[in-house]
Image (cartoon, rainbow, N blue to C red; front, side, top):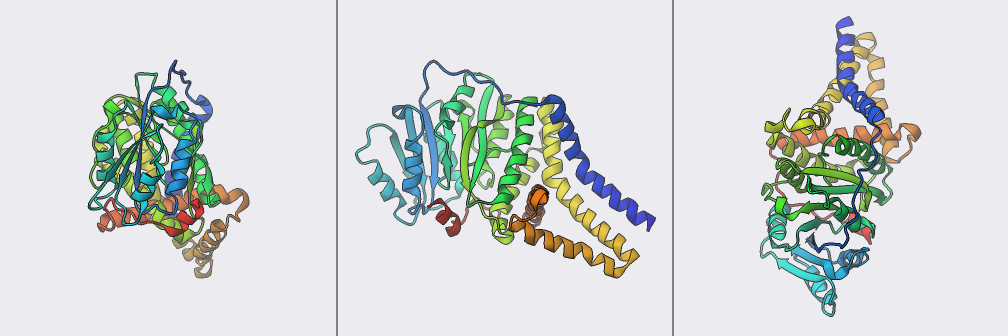
Length: 381
């Protein structure tokens, strides 16, 4: 039994020590949002918007873009559409009498996947700063000005923001995003952040290179490819957006698993820069390797080791482990764990990461084609 207890403790320590290490660095550094320089005049910007059967929400998204606190005559909207509904007709009709924002509407004859669509849209963008956003998100009016101000620094190649409100009221996702924001703020203070967000990511056009055709995390992959060019890729909590998300455990899986698969793929595809490229390669990427790849397995092995240890004491006692886990999941998806809810949000993410490993290993759902979630569209409406 001593051996089982030791194994349990080893896995538990392997799970939690990196969290403690990052927390200590955060407390020592006490990072604040990076300073920006307001440009004397705001430069023209291209906004890239991928669409697929968005007829129920596309008008709301277009109005969202027109509500940005930015000179509209300096905005170019590049829509890359692969819809089988009337989304492109709605977009064309919306822009019929508009003289401010310029529209480039690219219609795909066949749906090829998000990554290939974005590669084409980025190539079609004509301005020096390119912003990518999603239909199922809403932007803070100030986000574009805030993002553009970072590019006054010639070393910055990309910048992303934070989800300040989860549409649909998912406390699970909200808690996880809050934790993620602290991590990304620290990473940006040290060097560059790893994860970029689909609802709003801005890139320097000359730094943009094509992402993998089967990419499932195109924004993060592009940001990493830009960092490989020795440009900084930063997180700014003053760049704010809203995104729809589920709270229910199984409904969250398809949304979270796909993102998790994409992030894991990006790390494996770029494993050659581990322990290179300054603190980005020697600290930030290793932490993300631990969090996204190693930690899910450590948590699984910790649960198994604790269960086996409990079984060696009493078979009845061992039943309390899975029963407690099921109860925690049931309460967590109802946002009813009180102060423990934040730990559940981390556990929920680790579940998706572990599932993503199995999906990748079995070559399941590895294409860049995503399904429309009707419930998330209803949340947006």
